[in-house]
Image 1 (cartoon, helix red, strand yellow):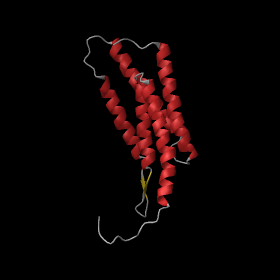
Image 2 (tube, helix red, strand yellow; image 1 turned 90 degrees about the horizontal axis):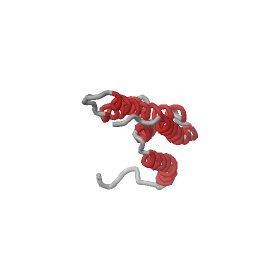
Image 3 (cartoon, rainbow, N blue to C red; image 1 turned 90 degrees about the vertical axis):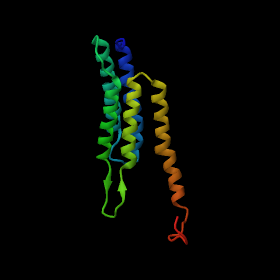
Image 4 (cartoon, rainbow, N blue to C red; image 1 turned 60 degrees about the vertical axis):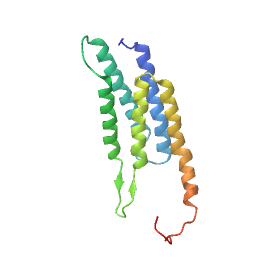
Length: 155
């Protein structure tokens, strides 16, 4: 594996930062705890760790090192970070699941940018925004539909 050119590293890191920030802007506008800075840092950090793993592999000869090990640890760390966003309230309601999963996706976006998979990173950012914005509006419309509190028969 060859060293990544410095210009390409800059592009990868910048793209990870911008795409993470795009998701974070929506979360900020929605008044969520994890916003622009959190999403930006998760995506940027993920890209950084991917780039580091690629650079280390290319700089050391005769090493049996799998760059996917670092990627797997990024996924685990993002999950751990996301757990901190999940809150169970006294009335047994749970909040923060969308934020947690969004942080997990931001890590994936950063990893894609770090590996140089720009189109995938951009596509997933768009799909994430669609999920945050469009599906939120659809959920609001569904909530307006009256349902019977008790069903005549169990499901």
